Amino acid sequence: MLALGAALLFQSAQAQPPRFVIDDEEFVAKVTEAAAKLIHEKKLLPIETLRRQVHARTCRLTLIPPSTQKLEGPELYERLQESVLAIGTVYKCPDCKDWHFNSSAGFIVGEGGVICTCCHVVLAEDAGIKEGYLVAANAAGHVFAVRSVLAADTESDTCFLKLDAPPIKPLPFRRGVRTGEKVYCLSHPGGYHFMFTQGMVARLNRRRNEVLDKQGQADGNLTRPILLLNVTAEFAPGSSGAPIVDEAGNVVGQVASIADAGEPDTGDQNVAPSPSVPVRFCTATEEILRLAEPEAAKHPGARKEHAKSGK
Image: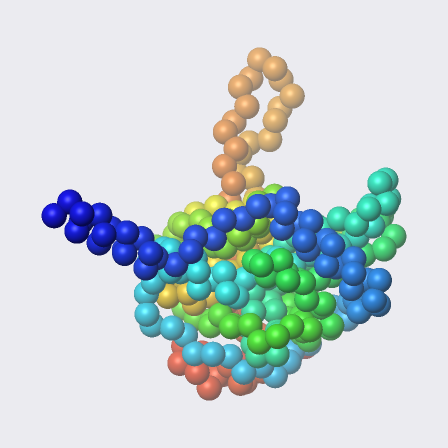
């Protein structure tokens, strides 16, 4: 009996899919090396070229229908890992002169390598960087060139980019998420790649963001009211553009920003500082789908919404 039990345990272990173990240093080195090769072969567009394409417009995109099958945590992680990429700038360091990779997140939404991320991932500039290129990489470290900006809405800080990539399974969108629903996030906070977190929708709110200029900086103007989710699933800088999904892997929002709910430091050493509480904001699916022309209305869970000029 003992031998039979051991054999069954061994068979069960053998039936489990291999675990994904990330080595962040190895991943970044692999991405940087592959991107440097593409730069040498002149297969990447300078990021300045892509920044000039970030202006309000829509595109025609065929979206897959929402899923109704709930997944357990490990299966959901594996599903998201198929579609979530690390996207960011490969740049030549002004100090050491080596190439570096500064990653954010994005997720595949359509056939032909269409990826969704935040506008500020493309627009953000560093005055010290003179040469940079935007690339995307999957969990295996395979690097894909970003070819163009297909659609953008700088007010809601979201955009669709076209990748030079083989077929990658897209994630479906779902409108109408409610407060209290369980949600998940797969992102790259602080360069810790493919971090999976769980939480819930804490509230829905409308908020006027600060308008971003061509350098990705706030210009003092305010946007239209944007539909946002506050979630308790953890993320941090480096997570921008990541999907917020439900238990079936449907995208209900996109990581946008973090605010600090604590009281500001008074500078008085005799007064204990107020606890800092991060409030995490995510752009709702309803705002992201303004980028997609009526093809989205063909599927359940989507209504016809023909956006004009990204508004």
